[in-house]
Amino acid sequence: MGTRRKLVIGGGALLGLGAVGYWFGLRPILHPDPPAVGFTLSDAEMATARAFMASNPIVDSHAHPGRTFLKSAENLSFKIKLYKLLGGTFEGRTLSDMRAGGVDGAVFNGVADIQLLTLGDSGLIPEREFAPGEAWESYRRQIADLQAIEVAGKAAICRTAADVRAAKAAGRIGMILAMEGADFLDQDLTRLQQVFDDGVRMLTLVHYHNNTLGDIMTGEIGNRGLTGFGREVVQAMNGVGIVPDLSHASEQTVLDAVSVATKPVVITHTHINTDALQNPRFIDRDVAQAIAGTGGYIGAWPVGIGETTLAEFIDRIDFLVETVGEDHVAMGSDMDANYKPVLETYRKMPLVVGALMKRGYSDETLAKIMGGNVLRVMETTQAG
Image (tube, rainbow, N blue to C red; front, side, top):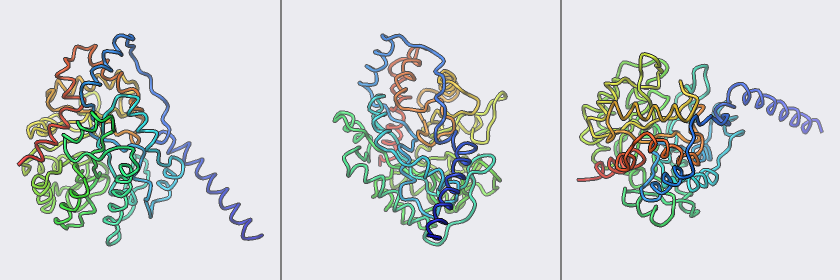
């Protein structure tokens, strides 16, 4: 009886702490308030947008649909355990949203350093280092969980751009597998071939943890830039056919990667710093133009930093197109792991398309932004 009573009291205390963590820290991340749209579209405009989407591949360059990265996660910090407990995983719901919103595919990301992270005053920060072998074991679990989505018949893993188009034609959701953070390479370059064989076609070098490849853009920024091993990894990724994603990387790390890359590199979810709005997660104009110079793209990021409506996100897409050109802009929703997103569900994607149409974007330009640039970079990376 005494043991049971302690368990009940302990469970109640945990739930109480969970409620505190939810309302004062995790709630804006787990269950953000629905943002205002800020514009209206007529029924005819919506019908035109949906017709365009039916005829062109709509692909999100960065997402975490259903937060699969949490499914088998182990050794989590207390706050991330709460995040997992209160939010859970929900691939089915997001896949349903994708179908309803006319989204054909997305880059489904695992999170390499999830077990190192906690929620600090200014966002996610690492609170420890990996134990030997821990990062690789975590990668194997996360990839298995992503692959299980295909095994269950819920979506199709797409290893090529042609696979994405074929999935659309067959009425299936396309998954381009990716990992946010390359910590699991553990300075073993031979693992890249295994990663490619697993179906991974995009790899973010760093996330919220300075690793053996380079420095992150948040927290205490290092002065290494891209390390020697990082240079080897970028070159090897070019060779094997994996797109390097430089999101979260320090400016020097990005510019170093650009200097050694022989194929396009991308930043899948960010915005550009301006005099009016600057943030550590945004990049400067010259960095964006350097990415464009490789043939890569910047993913327009509907994050709740300096914007509160979907209309303001449309403004940001405009700004990106003006800055780097229509061949170098994509969608990068960060779906299901974004901070106070102004695009919080794929069901609103027709609104994005309709709003851009209303601003005068041609079908050709829209096709690039809404998925074509992602597929082009994928094809270029795997060519030759």
